[in-house]
Length: 161
Image 1 (cartoon, helix red, strand yellow):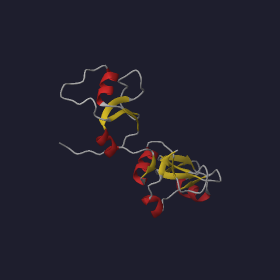
Image 2 (spheres, one colour):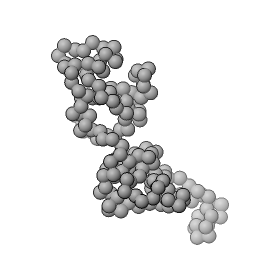
Image 3 (cartoon, one colour):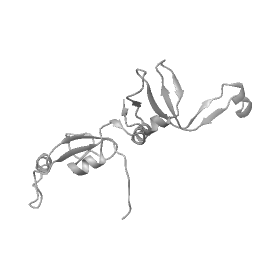
Image 4 (cartoon, one colour):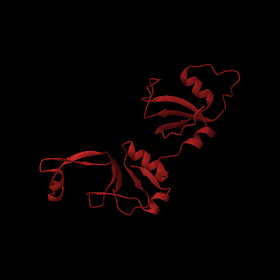
């Protein structure tokens, strides 16, 4: 068997195994404990809905498995925050001093050449290619390219905003 690692954005609510089976209209198998604590998990980033009550794919996870795999979206590590940004979410640190500041992922693209230095290299009416990068919306309501500090990388106070 191959080993995998994944990052999923989910919604979840506490629900016992028996409650989940009742929700799905299923009979609890005789060899399962209906009192097992767990979570109804709704996957937001893939899979067709399998119930009318939810827009994402729904399953059940035992509590221990759930807590080992998922954390709330405030108080995240930098790695999880970057994965969220790469999926189109805005991220921010709790410790930042500016209101409304956030970081987001800009995908690779091209823009029309404007500056003389770029025109001399790419040509007057060219498109300048750029690579993906992280940008920050600043407290001054403008945008700058952003590079994380060591403190940012090691922080556990990241959240999706």
